[in-house]
Length: 467
Ligand code: ADP
Ligand code: NG1
Ligand code: MG
Image (cartoon, rainbow, N blue to C red):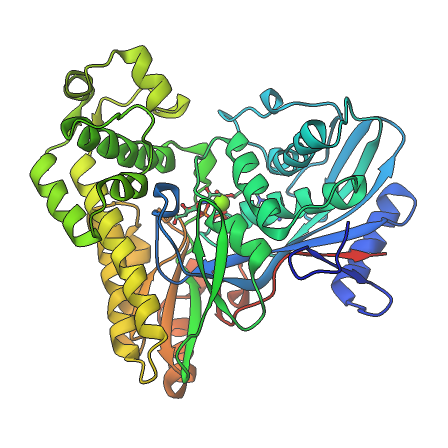
């Protein structure tokens, strides 16, 4: 791997960058496998400041990487077997042939090691397509150490997938891939787990830079720096409800509802609807502004849920066709779809991202307005996208009442974390009050408060350490 340009994931020499956590991971690896790893990869989780559930519709988002990451220590073995272990005993060890394919990942019953296999397969397939690799003639010893709170909207899944792809890439090292290419590969291969995400998490995990939030755009994936207002802190608070997005159909249901909204609008406008899957692409074809798209939703879509029968009639399609053009295996059973509400959220949220980016680069930035946009985003995800959780709503309310100028759910939702924008002068009293009022012993159930409630600043992107 060539790490000589900023476009490539960086490789550091561990001798010159000692780190106690890496040393501990290496020691545990050596104990498990009887020898040192060749490399350790690290990929961060992220907090999304604004732009929720719009990446998969082609719209830009505004995340920053967090300090918490997933590290993987690895070396090749000559057994043709991948041995996967985790420093956390709750994730049981697993072994499989190095010659697996994506059908091996059972999306109806996702397991933790499937996320590793997603990243591994993403790279293996690229090597098969571009590097002429026929079959794996190697095995790999793996040990994972993750610090991103899992199932909490901080992207622990993608940190694991990206770290896996990066270590596989480094170990097999046959072709050169840029950070943006790695991000796209990881966006595609994480879908093997079943969720049809849009690429935000993988993009920020690779393209993050210390000190900067990033405006991320898609098709192709690219990132630009976003300056955050001075005098404010971003605080992450976990409402302590966890949800694994691959284990339920909620996430894909939202993706499918947006896709159907796009296709039903396109059909009524006489466009070729079958190839259209993203509201962002529909907007480009129509050459309209986001405000005009919001009006178009009022004109073309009714606010009652659509039955599957009504959609089939509108699209002049049969069930089989709808399966290939629009649905996923875990949404084929659904009988009703909320097209109006989902499309309204997507266009309005895309507009809020644009507004947030525009305002944050003005010289006299109006931080209160940025906070308002975050609050409006929360209301939209809660009320019309219906992806919040009562505890998360209560927590964001509490944050606003105690000094946050903006507070919203971050990540997919249905539980997980809020991100709040808090004036620096109030942040200590804010942290104190939320600790006492929300993080009671009964709620924490033995969890360490520092791992679920913390200030964050933009961290750096994925990299590799040579052992
Ligand atoms: P998130 O919002 O954190 O991305 P997801 O539901 O997408 O939540 O993914 C959570 C899943 O990722 C977990 O159920 C687990 O399978 C996997 N995972 C996350 N962190 C780790 C870890 N440290 N070790 C093993 N698996 C992990
Ligand atoms: P989390 O909560 O990290 O699993 C998911 C998607 C993102 C994005 C957000 C909502 C994946 C891998 N991640 O994030 O692409 O759609 O929800 O904005 O599917
Ligand atoms: Mg995830």
